[in-house]
Image 1 (spheres, rainbow, N blue to C red):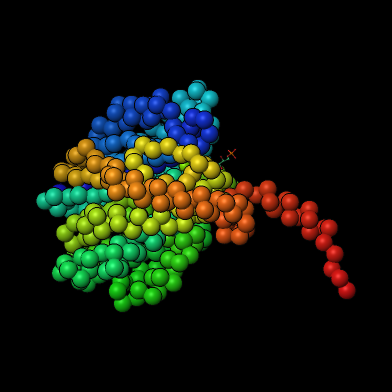
Image 2 (cartoon, rainbow, N blue to C red; image 1 turned 60 degrees about the vertical axis):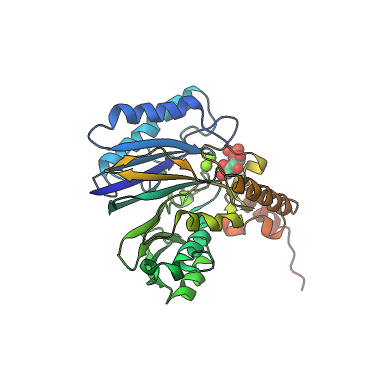
Length: 366
Ligand code: F6R
Ligand code: MG
Ligand code: MG
């Protein structure tokens, strides 16, 4: 059976700062979908990571379906009314346009979706990150799909010997989607040359070169490209099909032990280590650290199983401790050097004014 898995997420307000949506707002999203999904969806789950709410759903209408996107948009709109009623912080923050126009892309919410023929058993992972941007997935995806040091399947499982095709987007090109397709392993160094700059080049999708099937879909939204100013970090979501011709679940999870430094953290303007957390986790230290959650599912005829929380395991408690140390270490450096993002990536414009004022006080020595 051909099905589409669509994940759409938005920050529509949270309690006590940018840290967690209220129970009433979450319920409002769920209730809206429960009441209006007939005819559009086969199944759905609503979850949150930090201040972002994600709707994960299945249907048969293919990616970019107007009715599915409109349902999600309307659910977020309805729940924004509740957020406003409760006086939540940043109510409706990611709904950047007033009206729905056929597709939530470009309106603020982030989307990751893919259509595929269901395998007999169809396991997949749903990742949701907060306080960071879509380039945060570049490194773990590179390691899981192109590096046999992390993905043993690349040398042990014949279905993976041909490698994977990476579709990489230049997210600074805002007039239209600008993408490049590169094959691993032959073009590994070209892939690496792009992925080293995760603020500009972002993996959008990955395909098996053996079967041609899609394995990965990442949301590539850049909110400040849409709004022209800071509206919160982009907080990316990602779908990854696993097992068989794709990396095993554990091979996809493994690179997240690194806690690699990503852009985001406080005011979307700092570097912080990406911490794998349990689903429905909140945000704390320095509006961070940047976090990522992972729900593991099977889908059959569009019906979703209850998810397994992939980072809810004693192993990841140890990893979280290590990553906390990395977070504290870089925070000791405050605003200095690599601890704060380069000028072009700072999400708050205030410093521009400050530098303009100082400019007039500079003197050029003759
Ligand atoms: C980062 C984030 C927070 C806010 C910070 C200040 O993505 O959402 O770190 O930037 O709490 O928020 P405002 O400017 O709303 O007071
Ligand atoms: Mg927010
Ligand atoms: Mg967020």
